[in-house]
Length: 465
Image (cartoon, rainbow, N blue to C red):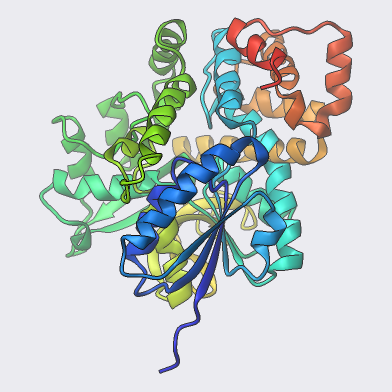
């Protein structure tokens, strides 16, 4: 048997607080995935965090039985040369951008959230041009590499790579399906290896069904368990609020935690506004958690992932990213829930669009497993959300203000009208630094005297943050 080829992995956004989670996953899988070197890449503004987390990453490997070198760089092109896998986990504008994404909509009584509503749209506007520039570098420096994307909004970012970057070797990932699969089996007295899962939908907007080892569907059993108070793996960053039982009984599928923003919109908005006026938005809370984490990471004795990292909402991130890479490398064809090209898995959507579905992942990438058509309610939601995503992606690439408005008006979290346009305009001003494709429109808005209503968002913008 031929010796396995050593692997070079590059992580864009390597200074992220999630990096120790990623290192833990690679260490656990080293016997299957023999990594030779890992390059952690970040930008100048993230240099301090990169150095802190990079030293910790090296300590984690030094504490393992494996000889792996961790390289740190601010030069993306230097890192990408001859990479086998490129993982992306970056945040354009850092956490201050997230805080503005949240606070500006909330100041007008609309949802402010990282991947939903106006905030999610603007995260895509900032991120898609950057991921496309990474793809251009990959075409030149590592044309055979796989791009494994964890950067949110993962579905839209990954689809833009396929549609506008013309790069097919991309898989989008999310920890939410894994969290469900880790927590749900115990609610019905089963283990994961006894169950078969089938997911279908979009990133942060999927449903799933579950079957036992005899092929019997047990989805309803898990639905019933939800209402007996059992934990079904809703991420830490989502306010836990069960859907109405009658709706679940009609759907006959399990929804993901992010569906709360759509199925319980009134209550989720109320909770978000309470935080906005009280303890601060989720981004402000995460900023404090991150400060605590990086203080821990500075400890020269710390050589393992701290428990506090679970508070970031990214639990099981390494299981998603590392399992995908290992499965591609070993041609294992494991069941993994990924964002990939539809190819008929969900006949309610075009074959060439990106969906988040159960897939078999091997050396040729993800083979989407057919789910079949959805019922009218879910079909309606899905088609609306997908077309909203396509408008977002086009606006991000072209800088077309009219298309941005179209995306806003399609989004179920944004009531169409003057208020929506005002929120759009303020977010454009707030993120001017990261939206060069909207430069002309932003200049027009500045001449019109558009200002930011929320004090915190306005101060961050005036400080150039």
